[in-house]
Image (cartoon, rainbow, N blue to C red; front, side, top):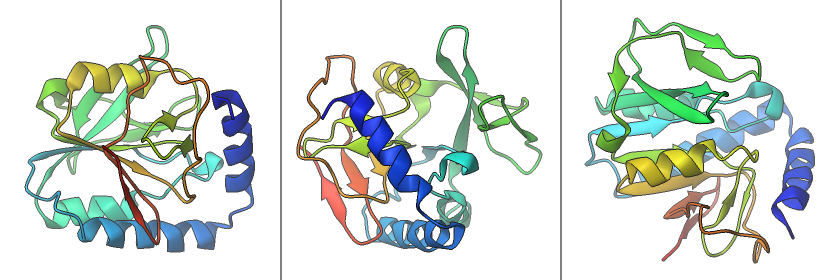
Length: 187
């Protein structure tokens, strides 16, 4: 399937999930992450969910990161140049939903993307090679290419597709993808 076909398919699949299912599956994903050898890094980038899109609730991963006293980095989208600006999440960070429903920091301590060690990456779909499909604007592909984190971990409610037919060189691949009941590792 193509990226556009997969976007339609997985938005529809997510629309069938209840809030209770989302939270139960999100907790299971966070628990899967606890089994991984990824907690020795210092700077972790995480996305905050768009609740209207039934995205994974990353609140449970945030609690793990806070409990492990890690630096948590979140982003603010610039829709003019399709880039992300990164901020340290602190107790004083004020969040506000942008026009797309994405919770973003209003300001705060900026973080250079090259200092980010691990990225928990949002996605709609992915394949057995670690190729991912997002919403189509390329924010994360540009960010990951620029920052070159040590590890990129996708989070998904659903298993991978066999292949995505229209991958291009600019598409950044995942190192792994975490499901509620399984961990996929990619070469």
